[in-house]
Image (cartoon, rainbow, N blue to C red; front, side, top):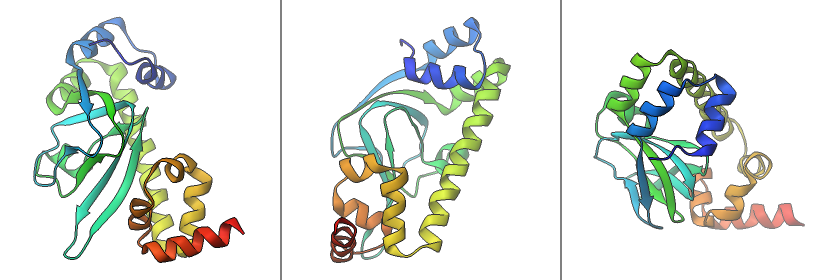
Length: 192
């Protein structure tokens, strides 16, 4: 598969890539298309691939007894996995579903580890990406634990405005752990 230019730019910003690595990576990547409203990963299945999203928007969620809890949103030029399922190769507790038509490049768990063993340049990239995504996860978790609903919404507005513009309000309310009425009041108060 042809290497996604944005993914290569992200990798190269972290560490120079060797031609040998790029050739191997190209041979390992698989094109992926996920139509709107279709799961890329269903709860109960193993996340066997990491996805680099070229275009589109996905959300992750898990089922509670009385509702579905939205946990995050992934957009173009980001990497997508169900973290515990991918790293431990166990059934996922969450689903990852397309909000928009999505296209990307997938790398299997086994190919990822082969590339890590064979190419030191990729180990640098992998470590930095893990650090980056872990810090983002901590930031989001802190936001959800420590702030009032209005502050949680303002956090999204400030740091992730594209989510507010592209994601249905029902999913935003679910992510913020509030109902639609509360979200409507918050939005009305901010706009006035």
